[in-house]
Every structure is written in C-alpha cells, then in structure tokens.
Image (cartoon, rainbow over all chains, first blue to last red; front, side, top):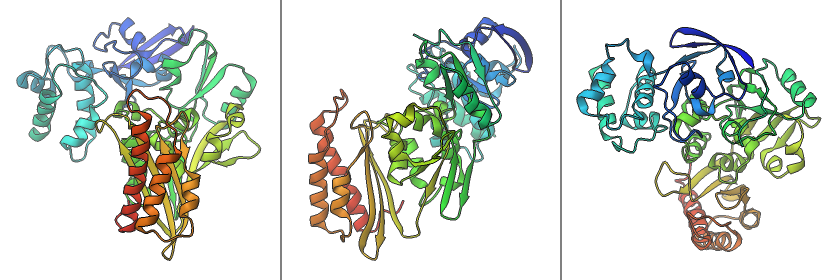
Length: 152
Length: 284
C-alpha cells in the first residue's frame, strides 16, 4: 500500500491505496460518481478529469501519478444546488440525452473556455474530441458551448 | 492482464536518479504519460519510473535546430509557437493525423511515442523523414538518429532513457511534406507519407521518404530516394518514382484497407507530393 495526498475539488484527501489503482477507481471509491467508468483504455473520455489543470483520462492514470496534485471534476464547476452558466446552457439547449458523457463534456468545455484566447468552433470541437457521445452527435453540446462563449 | 504486480512508483526530479532506478531494478519501466503502459502493461511491470517531473518537458529553438524534451506532450507541440510555421509546421500536421484526441494528446509524450516505435505513427514518420536525432541518457553513445534507433531492437531493449530529440533544418531545406489518407479526419490514417527534400540549385541534394501504416514498423523507400538523388524533378521522374513506390511496398494485413489499395495509394501520395514540390507549392 502507498500513502498519498490528493486535493480533489479543493478538498485534501489522505489515503492508503494499492499501487495499481487508477485515479478513476480512487475518485469513485471516494464518492465522486460524476467521473464515469467507460472503456478503461482512454478511448471514450467519460472519465475525464483535470490534474493540475491538464485534461486526463482518469482510467489510464494511476492514483500515484496524481499524488501531491490538484484534481478537478465536474463537481467543481458549481456549488449545488446552483449550476454554472455552462451547465444551464446545456439544459437550455437540450444538450443532454443519456447524460453519461455530460460531466466529461462539461469539464473539458469549461477548461477550454477558461484557457482559449479566442474561442472558435474548430478548436472547441477538438477540445472535446476526447469524449465520445453517441446520443447527440455533438450538435447540441457544441451549440450550448458556443452560446456560452458568445455570451462572454 | 493489467498491472497486477505493480508495487513501486517513483517520480524522480533528475534523470540520473531515474536511470539508477531503472538499472538497479528488474521490472521497472519508465513512463512519460503512461497512456500505453497503464492500460496495456502486464505482470512484468513491478515498478514505474514516472519521468513527468525530470526536467525534460521543454521546446527550444536555436537558429536552425529545435530541441524537444522527451516529456513534452503532443498537445504542447500543437500549441507551441515554435511549431506554427515552416519548417516545423509538419509536426502539427503529423500529430493531427495520429487519430488520437486532445484528451490523449495532453498526456502522450514525445519520448513515449518514440519508445513505442509504432509503424502506424504519422508523428514518428514525420520525425524520421526530417532525420531527427534522439538524445539518450544512460548510454555510452548518447546520440542516435531516430531511424537507426527504431531499427535497433537490441539497443531499444537496453536500459536507457530518451531525454529528447533534436531536429536540424539546413538553410536549403525546400520541403517537408506530409500526406495521408483517412476515412475521416479524426481517424488514424490508412496510409501516410512524410517526405523531406533539400535542393542544390534545381537538383535534389537529399531526400527521405517515410511511410506509416504499412507494416508493423515505419517503411522508408530508400530505392526511390536513390532514384531521386542528384536529379531535377520532372513529370517523367515523378511517374517513375510513383510506380516504384507502388511496386516496392508490401503492406501487412489491415482490415481497414487492402494491400492492393495501399500500394496504389502509396504511389498516389508520392506523386501528389512530388508534383506539389515541382510546382513550388510544397513548402509547408
């Protein structure tokens, strides 16, 4: 077992973990269920998180790789029951169907909007390309995200 | 499978410490981002040496030479101003053709790509075409051409760390061309070509032609290179080289594209590239 300390959504977690544990398993075992289990090989992106503000597929990240770092999930976007403006746009536009990929889409879109100097649809589509969405064909999520960056 | 025997993990701050760990411990493997080893590694992995904080994540431009540290991510390269124009613009083109996503590109490293040495990597084909040099840490002979490294299985199995690469671009560089064919833009290419060429007057002084997604390893067309060397490009020569490419390559089985199709496309890509160069529209 290995001793680790990770800041998850600004809350420090100390834990003893097995070395092969993935960050996905760590987060879910700590009650953060917004990080979804999908392909477990980095292909589908439903487990996306930010580690030190860099997007990562948590299913192919060891918990040990995040030791001493800051992890952010979609839960950091707003304080319940309030929603962030981007989350509201998703609802307004109807960008959520089955919802499985929605947390990852929101997180990556938010990260893109926070870092892009001059947001564009091309860049935006690339930024969220790591998250597979089989329901929406990306039309509605892209529309929602565009509405948000046009509003700002 | 899975990392069932993994018990140790280190994130050294110095390469000397990383190489010591690798040399002293059987079953220890280095990782850049870990995008391959973590999902696909097996019980042979007892320890991981994570190089992400070993001080080798940087891009440096010095006159006609670019240094890229091995822990530099593909996303770093896609967004770096240094790769925005000729002669380094091909780097972005080849990464965009890898068929991976930004989520993976933000973690995949240059060193990891080289260590895997996959034959379907457009990025590696581009680096091999421009004759990148790899800087090895922990070996007596520290620098080696990427092409030689990829083809030296004995060396690749020895304990060492890829600390970075250097790309040297002579002043008379004319073209670095990248061409590929994919089902859709975001899918990995069925076949891709990276072609590098320098001219002396109107004559071809040096040329390297590297294909990816043909075999398990990258494929270099040395016979076609020889045919081009010292000559002036013209339609007849282009046709000859194109026919030679189609005849020479022997694609492995690929359910996405038949060998006959890939042979035809190899000829087409070479022809297309050389026509671009000939009409002086090939500067990337």
